[in-house]
Amino acid sequence: MPAVPWIDISMPLAAGMPSFPGDPQFANEPVRSLAQGDPYSVSALRLGSHAGTHVDPPCHFLAGGATIDEVDLGRLNGPCVVVDIPPNATSIGPTELGSLPPNPERVLFRTRNSARWRASLEFFPDYVAVSDAGAAELLRRGVRLVGVDSLSVERDTDGRFPVHHRLLGGGCLILEGLLLDGAPPGRYSLHCMPLRVRRGDGGPARAALTGL
Image (tube, rainbow, N blue to C red):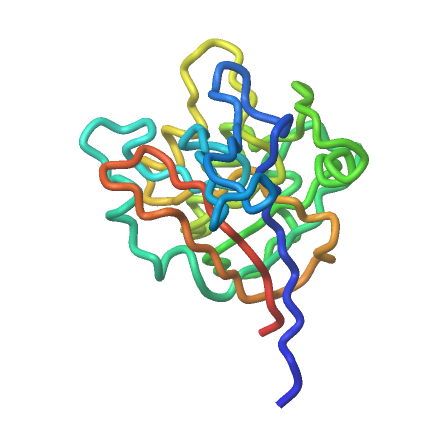
């Protein structure tokens, strides 16, 4: 059988990688090293629960919401659609959602953010994000997972985080920190496995796409 072509849409975890302002920086510190004469290599990792590509479970913003180890993996894996957002769009609202296919369960938004990540993995505050009206429209269309090529699904300006509350409160999981420059728009199968952190408020994940 021919090999299945995989498109890795995960952000590499490495020192100096981008992180959302205020979140812990990633560190990979050797504890044992073959190069130093040890019999094996092992490292200590330090990272935030929302480092790089990661899943937001309900408890990230909703008191009493499901934690990452309680999230149904079936919600994170299966058919999805990658949607191209015009490069001049500053946000993803109802107008930008006009091209969504009927009844999309999982939607990944490919914006100009992805091209910027390709040029440099440095945080930029003017990223394209989902608007509150866009979140409401996604729920109306029955979307159960939203993926974005930014470290946050929204650009909050007053500390209320309406998009997170609306999506998670409406039963829609959030997948953030995707690199979608190598994934042309179209239908795929999404493969996403967050770390099984007990009572975790976030899950760093490896995410990839294959053809249906």
